[in-house]
Image (cartoon, rainbow, N blue to C red; front, top):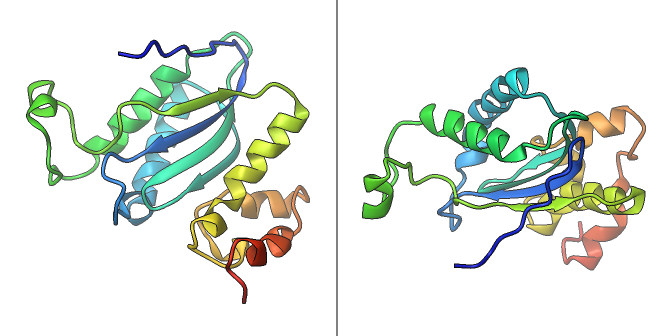
Length: 176
């Protein structure tokens, strides 16, 4: 088994990609986005973190979050978010014998992608990546049309203009 190394940095700002186990044709996250929001809110109440950027896509999500200065435990936060979301759903998914033996649900991939943000340029690049994803995956032609993103809040705060990705649609093959 590979030796995965995590960057544990108290107060760190991290980019994450978290996937559902069954990605093909799955819209579980957007269909149940309120349950996901509730799970995140519940975990944040006990294990605080700042959400800088977040996008929920049908079968995966991306986010940039910042941990408190004395805390580097993002793993507990993700475990609790996944568990809370999973518990809120009826048990209808197919589960392998291994998952059944471990009493695990068949909703999330076990692992996730994590990246410790290193500087302001890295932060901006990952924030842009988070927010461009609905266009990248062909879900919308304009970011303002995707409701499951912090993009709208950041437009209100003046971080992004409402037409921020206007130059990318054609480059990605999604012209009006």
